[in-house]
Amino acid sequence: MLKSQTRMVLIPAYQPENSLLDLVREVNASGFLSIVVDDGSGSDYEKLFAQVSELAVVLRHPENRGKGRALKTGLHYIFENTADDYTIVTMDSDGQHRVEDALRACEVSERHPGALILGSRKLKDRVPLRSRFGNTVTRYIFRLATGHNVYDTQTGLRAFSSSLIPTMLEIAGERYEYEMNVLLGFTREKIPIEEIEIATIYIGDNAGSHFDTLKDSFRIYKEIFKFSASSLLSFIVDYSLYSLLSVLTGGLGASVSLTMSNIIARVLSASTNYSLNRKWVFKSKTNAVKSAWQYFALAIVILAGNTFALSMLVKQVGMNPYTAKLLIELLFFTLSWSVQHFLIFKKREAHQETPNAV
Image 1 (cartoon, rainbow, N blue to C red):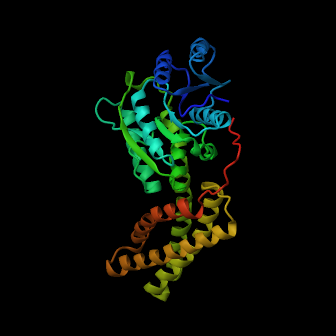
Image 2 (cartoon, helix red, strand yellow):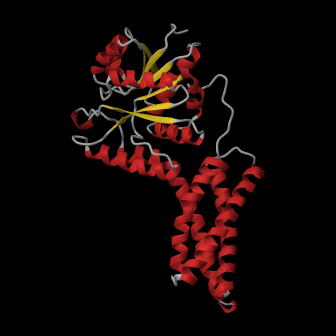
Image 3 (cartoon, rainbow, N blue to C red):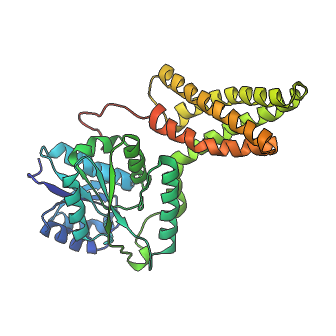
């Protein structure tokens, strides 16, 4: 068992600089217990980690497994070896986080033990372009996906109560996508997320970062991409059937043709969309009958709104029916995502009593 401690700092480290030693010393001097995870840094770093092990608990991966897995390894170790209530702060190993900011985040977490506290950097001057651009894009995509405003979605300085560890160990992700998945998972479970402003520090134009812009960005956005792909495929089915049926039923009159074509196309595309979202996008384990009823209730509401809006644009505004269909589908995309993500396919798996994360 670890010694009784109310505050801990967890540092995932992959091929870190020697400055890691200074960081651990400062962390310890501030009253934290330090836990460092060597994420397969290799033999060239054995001497450094041997020195760190004199100051902190050092956990090791035999090979590089990713930041997400390193965080889970540390959390699992803490969960298994500490019985007391405590606060954990995660920090990056590259010197981009100040211990005084970790202390402030810790204090806020202790006042709000049920919340995740983010150390938010206000990315302004002298910030590498790729970091500023990436965070801006991610911020707006996260808002689109969840309806929540988080200024710094990519910060590694996070504080939280030990009570949240079981939830965090259940969240998928092995590499950089894990931290984004935590935010998505917490918003889905309605766990509060709060931000405090911290110093923005980039050393050497962030050259020490192991973030792969293309590969890791794809991992971060994968869940949103999958929903978009599912919606796109269903839209192709919907739009193709709508266009075909509009031609075949044109002799019935514009009003009858438009309504009939839209309803039939929507019912068939909704069936396709439900199957894709349940099995592929959200990988839901909820009762199939219950989620099907919820999904098709949503589909009926969207169909009614879709058909009404389409009719208004075509009949009252005089818009081309094919253009109107495109606009309406885009409008209802966000509504559909939000309801499915937070209500229909919300993950409700029971927490494991003893998480198996290693």
